[in-house]
Image 1 (tube, rainbow, N blue to C red):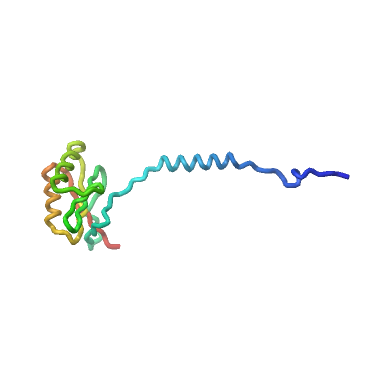
Image 2: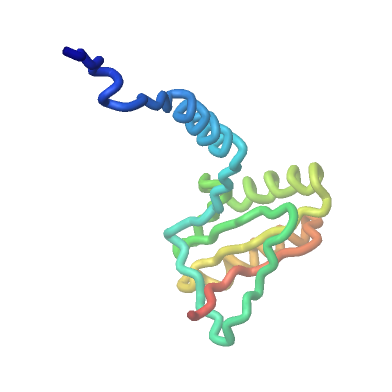
Length: 138
């Protein structure tokens, strides 16, 4: 009588632990090397719509985003600031990077005075370029 081993009946076992290790290393590599840049957007600001579907803004280079809410509050980098604080902060940024640009995101229901004040601050501290953000229709 011939006795067979049970291991040979099941076939060969493939060890995939090395492949799983390599896959985890690749996943970690891609997660670490990918930079996540979150765009600063104040969701309380409703931008006006530009009807010709042309963007008025150019978002290249060093950029400061100033959000103006309907009530006239200025929000920069998620923090609410006053006009004096905005002037001081923007002046410091221009000293660090003279080629800095400003993107003003103004609520469509806010007063024109708030936008004019921010543009005046930009001019007084020496900002080379200031743009106004609008939302284009699809």
